[in-house]
Length: 255
Image (spheres, rainbow, N blue to C red):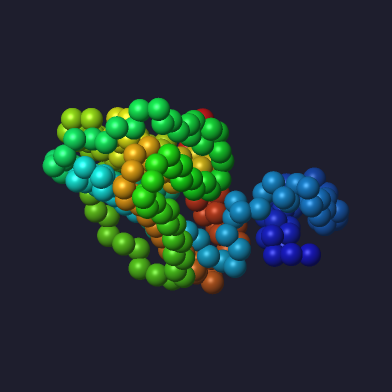
C-alpha cells in the first residue's frame, strides 16, 4: 500500500466515519473500504504527500531572437502565485519586451514554409524546433526548481492580468497573461516565430525559423516552494488546506 493510499484512507476516516457513526455507533469501522487502483490513478498528484503544501508557484520566461539582418527581438515575463496566506492565490505579473532596428533588408524567404499548428493540441510539456534554412542556431531550455521550507518571494510587478507589446516594421513582440494563460511571442513576418506558453494542461516552447543565419533561444524556469504544515494541526485541517490549494491551482486553467 503506497503513501497515496494511506493519505486517501485517512481522508475517508475524516469524512466518512463521523456520518456513519451517527447511524450505527456500535460499528464505526464497517463503512471503510480501500479505494481501487484505477480510481487512485485519477487522483494522484492532487494532494501533496508528507505534510507539505505548495506556498509559492513562479514562472519565468525569456526569449531572444537575433536575425541575420541585425535586428534583435527580446521578451521576458515573470508570473507568481502566492498560496502562503491560504485561500485564493495572490498573483503578480511583470512583462517586458523590446526590438532593435535592423541595419539591412530582410532576407528573402519566399518558397519556404513551416506549420506548427498541431502544437496547440498538445497537452503536457512540449518543445519544438522547426527550421527551413541554413546556418541557424536554436535552443529550448526548461528548468524546474523545488525548495522545501524555502522563503516565499516578495510579490513584484503588476497584480492580476496584463500585457506588454511593441512593433517595428514586420517585427512584433508580445508578453501577456489573461488569467488563464501566460504567453511570450516574438515574430517577424515571413521569417518565423519564437514562442513560450503556460496554459491549462500545457507548457510549451516553440522556435520556427525560415531564413538563414539566425539565432533564437527560449528559456523557461519554474520555481516551486513547499512549506511543512504544523505537526500539531489536526488531520481534518490538513485535508481542508489540501482541498483549498487544489481549488486554487485549478483556477489557473480555462473551463
